[in-house]
Length: 466
Image (cartoon, rainbow, N blue to C red; front, side, top):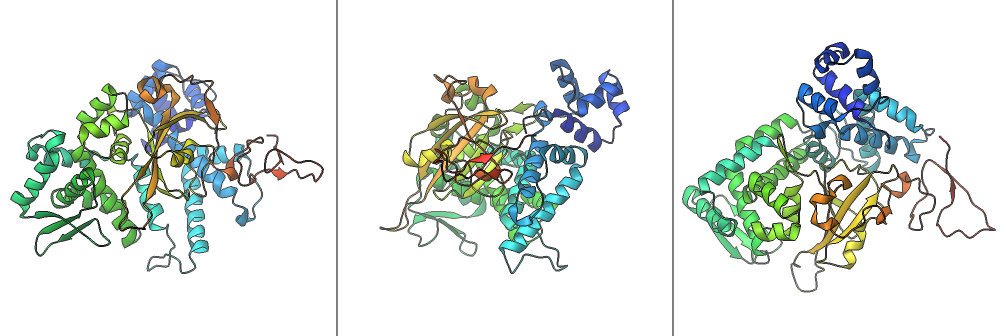
C-alpha cells in the first residue's frame, strides 16, 4: 500500500480511452518505453509531466492519485485474508500485480467475495429473479456514491436552478424562502407539531408537510429542502438512479434517498459560496455551519462533495460512526482506504471523540504505509424521542492528507511530524507488532505464544518477511 500507484492510474485511464502506449507517449512527447516504466511505477513523474498527463487524459490531478487502485488493493487484501475462506495467504506483491494488471478481474473477485458474504451472513439470501446473488442494499448504495466520488454535477445544476428560483436568498432567510416556495408553487403547507416515531411526514392528499417539534431549526430547514428537491429535482435524480441500475428495490430507494439528501445539501449550501467560505474560514466547520445555518454534520457532509472539475476543494473523507463502532455513512474523497468489513483502529481519534461531546478533537493519523492524514472528529447528539430514551450519539469525522494541513485551521499549532499517531485500518489488517490497543491478532501473521513471557501487547506475533 506504500508504493506509488500513479502508474496504475495512468494505465487504467489510458485503457478507458482506448489509447495504445505509443499513442499516449506521442501526445506526451516521451518514448513508449518511458511510459511503460511509468505505468509500472518504475519511474517517477515530474510535476510538468503530471500536468501534461492530466491535460492529455482530460482529468483533474486528483484522478491520477491512484485512489481507486489503492481501494482495489485493500479490498483484495481484505478478501484474501478472510480466515473463513480457508485459502493460503496471498502475498501483497501478487495482490498489487492482480489489481494493476487485471483490474476488471480483480473487481470480479471482489464481487464474488461480497456475494459470498451475503449468502453467509443472510441465510435467506438476496437474489434477483434469475437467482443471482447481489450485494446488501446498503453496500450497493455505498459503492454507488464511492464510484461517483460523492459528486454529482447534474444535481449541483438542479440545486442551482432551484436557488435561482428562490432569488439567491441569504442563508439566514433560506428556511423561510423554501417554506414560501413550497406554499406558493406547490400548495404545500408546513406545520411543526408532535410526531410520534417520525421526524417528517408528508401527506400528498392534504398537501401537508409535518415536521417534528423535536427537530432543531437547522434540521427543519433541511427537511423542507428535501421536500422541495423531491418535487423539483425528481427527473435529475431518477436519471441517476436509472443509470445506476440497482439490483433491488431496496438498493434503488437507498440511492434515491441519498441523492435527495445530496441535492438538499447543495441547495442550502451552494457550491461556489460554500467553497469560497471553506477557503476563507480555513475549513473551520463550526464556523461554516453557523454561516450557512446548518448543522455540523450537514456542513461536514457537504464539504466532502466539493469535487467539481476545475473548482475542486480540499479532498476530505467523511465518516459517521456510532458508539458501537458501526459506520452508517462514509465518503472517501481523500482516498482514505476504509476497510469494508470489521471495525476500525481503536487508536483513531474517531473513538476518543465520544468522551468529549461537542468538542472538536484533532489527530495526525499515520497508516502503516506511512501515509498521514490530518483528522478531526466531534461527537454530535440528537434529541431523544421521549423521556428516558437514550439520546442518539454519533461521531462525525473528517480528514485530509497532511499535505493540505496549511489550508485547515485544525492544524494550527501542531507539529505535524512529531504529533503523528500510528493507526491501522483494522486490527485484522494491521501489521503493527507493538500496539497495546489491539483487539484481534492480524490475519496474515502467526502468533508467537510463550507462557513464560507476559507481553505488554495483547497478541505477540511474528512479522512475515517479504
